[in-house]
Length: 299
Image (cartoon, rainbow, N blue to C red):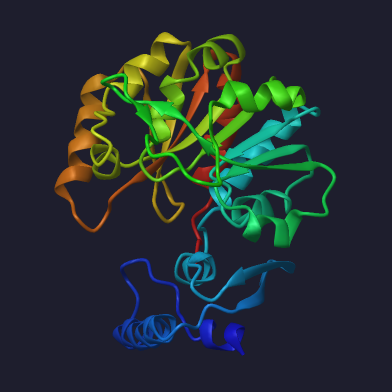
């Protein structure tokens, strides 16, 4: 029933017919009313045939129907990386219900360390998978003013440094890809793991959200020269719906200033997803870029 309801939504990329936009408005409006009334039951959706269990108020299924390429950018990057690194391991900081993992596993299976401050959702989907290690924790970071975030202690969920988590899960110390999606402290987490990034130079996929970061008093524009100083050279920039926009060199600070301030200026888009590659993975960058340029018929 829920799938039928959500399937009424039409892809929305700014050129949808008026009737589709009106239909989407009413479907999303009704969903909002139902959530307000307390409809948060668990149901099962399918991602290209793979089941995923989620609550009615989770936005993942909505995003996939409105933006069909949503989330598959990271899955394609992992697939390309797996070609080079057969022993690939992946760290997912902010794994939520395991939506990214569901999409990634369409392209290949490899060990995954999933870290999230609430693991009920991901355990529903991957609690019985021996190659997925689930850790219930906030990952700490360090802001541009050297303050630790998150600062508020939680009664039940620990705040741990990534290094401490890896000490207990040493098989992931050499992970080749790290994804960070933590609602504003992504760059703080990258700052707090300088040694890991400098020594291993994993591919890093993170959310760049200047407004959310400012809520933690974190000025994040400096993350690009920081990463460049650790050996990262190139970045791929995606909009929040998973569509590839452009590549840029980490050393091109003028470009990053323009991107940063465009996000602050343009209200409908609050963040970009950015994937950075070190000089050791320039081949993966080139393959991924060429693959993204072929993603034309995204509807």
